[in-house]
Image (tube, rainbow, N blue to C red; front, side, top):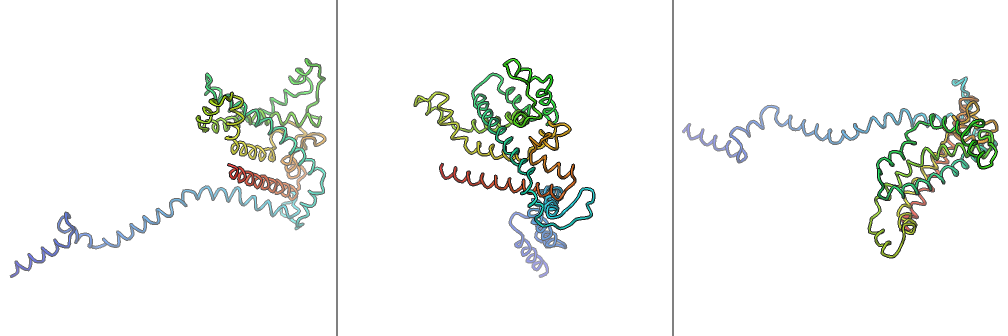
Length: 340
């Protein structure tokens, strides 16, 4: 009788086990700590799947908040106060007076005009030259990789080194530019002191540094254009110029719009080139403020004059200008999508 009961118990325990599992595996699964350990591991796995992405991106947001968001908000607070660099602890609430003073300041409107002028005469030639260079590089040339590296070399050059070289080129006495003008019968130009000459000189530095960079962007977009479009245009009798006008340029409209917006933003924030080009009077944009940009005006008010409240108001005015540019970009992008 005892042996038969043991046999029945053994068969029952074997039936509880899953097919193919060794005897005793089912008992081991329900042993001490089994269900609790599995539950803890499953919770840990769920926490890992949900929390790991946030942990990976957390360093960026921490650094962004500490070094970008907090200073930006603090600058907005400064723009509503009268804050002097020599006495940071003494802040007087002024409301929108700093912004009202900007609107009534001739120096602010002069800096805004110079920023717009330098932006136009640097952005337009830059992007046109970049488009032409990208069109040439799009065809099979010997040493195409070398030419692409050469295009990127000015962008990799530091602003200080590039501006120093251009300052020597535009020197009043002994500069190469005036030396070349002498051979075509043009008298020497005081590039630092003249209005249009100084703005042209600063713009040429920007054009030299960024043309190759934009050319590579256009080249990458050109290589993504389907070859069937060029073959169809060639069968219709279109030459290379006609293919460029009616195939390449329409396909590059989104990329051209992107480079225009980015170059406009860069022109609005232009600072290093005019500061170093002017030398001693660089922060004022020349002796007559003839090439003082908004970036230079903000630097002059904040660190030379010491009026941090007004400098903060200039910074936020530049930010509002960039928001307007972004809004125009969004509007044009939507229209281009609808037209396509």
